Amino acid sequence: MTTNTRTAVVTGAGSGIGRVVARALLEAKYQVALAGRREDALAATADGHSEALVVRTDVTDEDSVAALFEAVRDRWGRLDLLFNNAGTFGPSGPPDEVSVDEWRTCVNTNLTGSFLCAREAFGLMRRQDPAGGRIINNGSISAHVPRPGSAGYTSTKHAITGLTKSLSLDGRPFGIACGQIDIGNAATDMTERMSRGVPQADGSVRPEPTFDTRHVAEAVLFMAGLPLSANVQFLTVAATGMPWIGRG
Image (cartoon, rainbow, N blue to C red; front, top):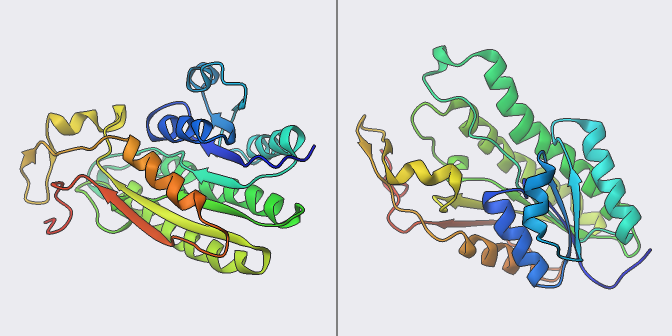
């Protein structure tokens, strides 16, 4: 089945940034596949929307990811956008206190999961008619600078930048654009603790400002709305007062 309507996949769509971005895409008349581990949370994101497709997905599992994109192809015939968003903060603490299993879980979710989704999206976009599409990877301020005790998360987010650059280059012959959005302190359940105080580079614990997640959705919509002849390679959106510029 082919369609002139734009289609998108959002991973980690059951909560937080993924939920807000997925709903914004639906409001913008995209057909959106909502991917995540919890089907009930995905259904809550969809909220009965007729153009939402709920697909329970484990991004660390190759077969599960393949099934997600097969469902998109069967339902809509093509894919125009992947928002590669699923991720976890992973273990926290000095490196010698981080277990190897925790490290691997973080890498499998944040990096391998992003690769598996990008791999499937790339293949679909490359072979569809007309070819092309856009991949937007969710990086982080941690793709630039670390927080204390964040070796796993920071390493994977630095690696996402390398993945973004490789996808951007490898996608050129096929009309596939890839960019990265780096988000700092968007207000979600995962960042709620920031209002109570988080460790700083100087050893203190201080609260940090956050900003409304809808601004992330607006940024993603801007990136997604460009023609494939133009690309936002990297975009940073952060709380104005967060300790990033001058961090440490």
